[in-house]
Amino acid sequence: MDSGGSGDLHSLEGDQVVSAIERACESDLRTALRLVARYSAYWWSHGLQDEAAAAAERVLSMLGRTVPVGLDEEYLLAVLHGAASAEQAQVERAQQIVLESTGPFRYSVTVLLWSLVFGPFEPVGVVQDVLERNETGDAWARAAVELCRGYPGLTTVPPAEAAQALRTALGRFRMLEDAWGTFLALSALRQTVDEPLDLTTEALALAEQLGLEEETGVLLCQRGDLYRALGKLEDAREDYSQALDVSERADLPETAAAARIGLARTARYCGNLPAARAHLSAVLAFPELEDAHFEALHELTALNASEASA
Image (cartoon, rainbow, N blue to C red):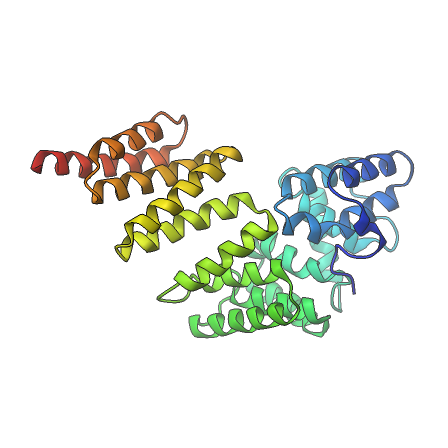
C-alpha cells in the first residue's frame, strides 16, 4: 500500500509539485491525478490543504465526473482535497467509489482523509464499514483506523472505548515514528483526559516540527489557558505572546485575537490593567471577528470591574 507521500515522486517539493501537476493537466490527466493522490499525505501533514485543494480543483475541472480506468481511489482523493468547491456530481461519484469498494484502500492516507472530510456526514454504519475494511491494511492504515474510531464525532463508541482507541493509535504511530499521525492522535487524546498539559506540550512540539503554523498558534493559546488556570502566569504570558507572533506572521486573525484575549486576562490577573485594556482594544479593532469580539467584551467587563474596585 501507499501512504500517499513516498517513492520517487517524493523528491518534488512545494511549487515543483504544483508545476508538475499543471504540466500533466495539459498532456496526461492520469499522471496529474496520480500526483494529487501521491502527495495527499505530504500536503496534509505539512498544513498545505489549500495547495492540495488548488491542485485537485485543477484536475477535477478537466475530468468532470469521468473517472480514468483504474484510478478510482485517486479520483476519490482529488474530491476529498477539493470537496469545498467540487461539483455535487463529483462528490456523489466519490461516495459511490467508497460504497463500491470491498477491500482496504490502496493509499493508507485515504481512510483518514475520507473519515475527516466525509465521515461526519455519512451514516454511522458506513463509517464503521469503511474502518473495518481498512483493518487489514498496512501498519499506518491500521493506526489511522484506531485514530478514526476514537476521533470526536466520527463514531458512536462509548467515551472510554474512544479514548482507548486513541491510545492505541498513538502507540502505533509512535512505533512507526510518524510525526503527523502522532500529532493527530495526541491532539484528539488530549481532549479526553483531565490533565492535558503534557499531551498538549508534546503535540505542540510536533506541530512546530511539521511547520503547522495554524495548529501551533492554537495549541500555544490552549497551553496558555492551562498554565493560567494553574496560576503559572509567566508561562501563560509567554505562550500567548508566542501564539501572537505566529498568528500575525501567518496571517491568522482568529488565533491572534485569542492570543490577545489570553494576554489581556493574564495582564489583568497580574494587575497590569493598562496592558490588558490595550490588548482588548486591539481585538475589538479586528473586523468581522464576532466570537472574538464577544469574548473581548466579556473580558472588558471583568477589567472594568477590576478598575472600579482598585
